[in-house]
Length: 291
Image (tube, rainbow, N blue to C red):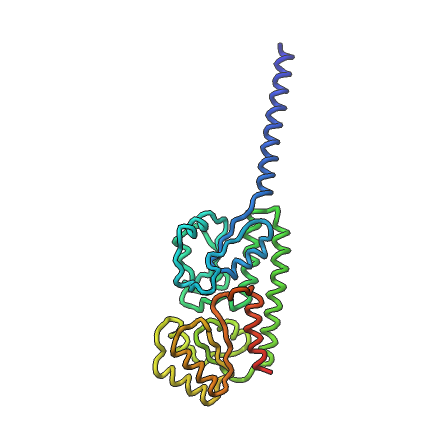
């Protein structure tokens, strides 16, 4: 009887062991086959996420149309569902896309936090390529915690992405080395981070801030800018072509009349462009002016 009991015990132990091992194997298989679901408010940050994530998940950019103003974006039921199902959420921060906070209470990756930029400061962080490098590094950390077995792959993907960022920085350095020893004027502070990297100072910050806030610049600000243009005291004028301000369009026409170069930029990623060739096309306008 004891012998039979012993055999039964061994059989039960073997079965239990096999079940446990089988469960572990299934769990391991599940972990290795899981895909991350990433949601980004803006498409160029989504581009960074895709580069780092590779084939290990999907990335959804909530704003992927250049005609949508991120400030005025209105979430839909679909948007809310996409955000609720996200494993990782990426946002710009600095007050630019705060609407995402209403869709999810999950902790998100904020570009502003990575760059130590507070609400009220210049929110156009993507025009500083360093933002994209820091975001790539942060994504490696976040993705690796969720998929530890893929850490090496994430690091490799991020390194390849950051090489492209380095090429952008090289262009900025070349422009800085050849910069014209004059300040510049801008329609609004969209491009200011890149200008700072190039070594240019903005001469009409008050005018630009008013335009950004969709209010009319003061008479004094307009007159001062007009005089700088007429006296050729600025190297060029940076024009956000997505602006519908009549005042700005009049300034652009005045620049053309007085042979002040106009650099055309956009706040959102143009259709058919990626982050890198978008910024390169704008940087090269300035490089051409400096020749």
